[in-house]
Length: 235
Ligand code: AMP
Image (cartoon, rainbow, N blue to C red; front, side):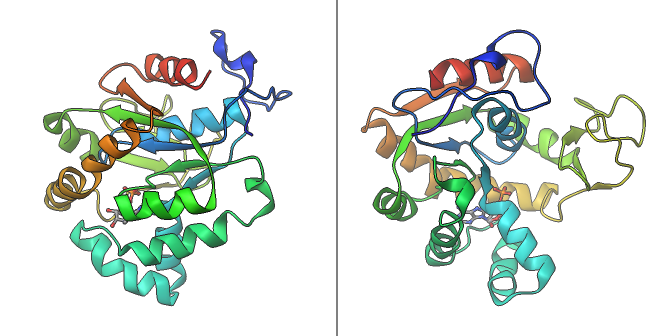
């Protein structure tokens, strides 16, 4: 069972965790959609409103690459090429992650699952109550990805044109002064990532749709509108 804080539905978005309310029939959530759809941005917001921890396989892999682990070294060649990392590597990461204490009420998966074998493996280890598919047309993806950067301290997501920091060089959320750009956020790699999405990940939408837990959200709108629709879909 997982949680949805009713307090977030109003116009003011709390930055401090308030008391959580348990929503019926809500367990783990999968955030689904092409690269650059805004899954990470929405994940941060849904984490605030549900209390579910964000589990991003992309973040876990980037941490493994930075730490120079064996998993990281194996994953890097796929990530640099914009290809999916082999299923078993991802499934093993997730199996370990959901053993952690904060996952006891479910988690919010960001960028996982991406293939049918991953979804079948997940179904054997935890219950998914909602799959939120954030849809953005391909022609918008490249511009969205190529201007993207994050705060090195808190991970808040920004964009050169669409969502710059309010004060130049200073994170709106934590005041951090350092920012990062992902190595794979470039025009060449984006085309491979999009192709992987359409050939390997898109078919998974049908799979979840047949289970009646698939919610399509138009991701080509203002960030707040998207968040509101996701919160509504989770109720
Ligand atoms: P993301 O941060 O979700 O865009 O992921 C960045 C890269 O990590 C992807 O392009 C893949 O190479 C790899 N990756 C992340 N999550 C998965 C997954 N669930 N399955 C396979 N590869 C993944």
